[in-house]
Structures are given as structure tokens and as C-alpha cells.
Length: 105
Image (cartoon, rainbow, N blue to C red; front, side):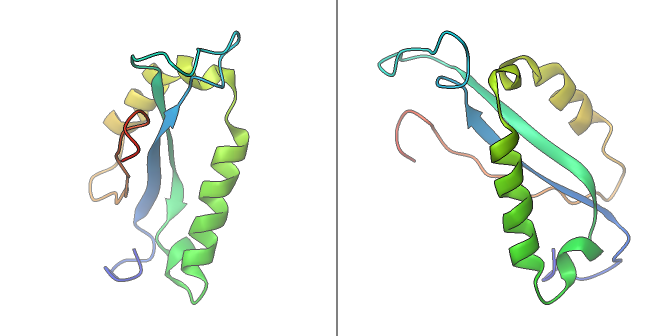
């Protein structure tokens, strides 16, 4: 976000996949070879939040807070997350990560 520069008032956010196996009750066995993945999406920021000298640390704190907030309900929030992606304003910057919770990638 900082490297891109531009309008500090533009909407930004972040998203990442979540392995839900240990979050649901009862927990899904660790040898379960299937999909038990959800996501988290935060889009309530402006670029200015991350463009300062400590922008990377601010981002790390927000991601860490998002992880701490995860609970068993995350598995049922997929409709809300999809709505969040569909209602992003034009020009929104939302960095995401991808990978597999099963293959160590």
C-alpha cells in the first residue's frame, strides 16, 4: 500500500484464509483430508492507515488482532465475506494471501 502511494483516502483492507479444523466444536480431526477452510476480510481502512513510517507494523498488528478474534463462528461467515468482496468500492486495494492448510504451502 505504501509502495503504491496515491490517494491516502482510498479504501484498503486485507484478507486471508483460515483453517477452521481446530476452531469448530467439536474439533475436526487433524487427519481429516477435506476442506474446512473459511476466510477473514477486513475492509474498514484507508490507505493512510498503512502509509506512514510504521505502516508495516500497523498492518501486522491488525492481522494479529484478526487472528486473535477467530472463533468457531468463522466457518459460518462465508456468506458475509463474499458480500464484503462484492461490495468493495471501485479502486479498493485489498491484499490477500493464498496457500494450503493441508500441504504446508
